[in-house]
Length: 547
Image (cartoon, rainbow, N blue to C red; front, top):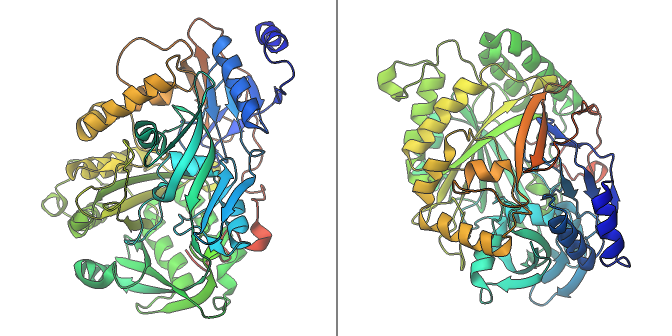
């Protein structure tokens, strides 16, 4: 440990624990990036959080708060300090009558739902996974797929946050509203959220059905029944087959009923698709055939095939994300969905320029399936986060162009596919999901234009909350901060190099301080890692049973 830090710890609140280690290697869940933090800290109390922030500021260190590292971008990378809140995960207060709980913000979503279900409640809206910390899900705009709900953060009633000077602030819909709006989608740049009071709903089961439909049916019913016939709807679009798997669910009092067993729905399908994707990195032209075979084996080769089940809502909204992947998701107006999908479909299928009008060639380019199609409606929320990229005047459509990294190898189509995809999203005023893989080389001017005064207000609150830039890194500077002088504790990127597993090793430094450790990062086997709660079905139904 740096002698300066040792001296500071000896002089400043020596009775408050400073729980740190120096040998941690941080990797994103998808193994797209790796970094070696100087210190890895796991505080167990708010007082410990306050101390470590004050020590970091005094010693000119940057802090990154990390949960499961599910963001595949470089947002969570640092050569400075990582703070993990896994040990700040207690339930603090419960109001069963109103379905409200107050919890420490480091609790993982799967654990939060277990605690809620034990008290007859559940999270009213979930995305595809529950590995994230509660604070992380709130701070990045995590969402599910339903027109009856917005983002996960919409049900936050209040939270407590420790700011860059170590002070503890409470904010809510009615108190400290500017900080509340900035903190609800903070991107980790304001402070550390330590407590959250949240509005749950009564625990129940979900009855879901997934049906293989032609893309034409999805587009024909887009404005009538597709998104309104059930509480939860999501679509997986198979671009070369021009078909979609439509998943629809409603709450029910019916008893649990598992999905029909399929030999292909377990490890057979998992490893088959994985291997075929790896081969397609060498021979991309086989991807349409892979799509036909893999999804035909799982969902049937004829349209109209369907399966259904009844699951606890705690698990029913979840799915297995399969393999390491890049995810590039944008929010656009729902009403523009048929037009956007039709243009993207024409481009992916190499139609004439007149049909797609996308000024990038798709010749020789082949992409992965499925493309995820989801929705939300945030028009009725009481307080909108400053950096909320959803639509204000109509429901929001999310399009997620997923590209797998089979056996941790990048697909050859990524750069050109994402260039065209993002160009199209911008034509409709789209906003990227902050925690995913949007191309950010030229993002800031576009985001400054589209967010306008909201981004300026967020910057103002950020500067007031953390004037020394204890929570500011290279990702923030590229995407959401204005040009100008560096903050005292701001971390800049020094270099990124290829890692042994195909990802990138990231090295940063604080201005005027020594660069981070250049030692090679050796990562563990991605596929061998057992994810929390798998034995209890936390990942949803088994692998391919539900896409």
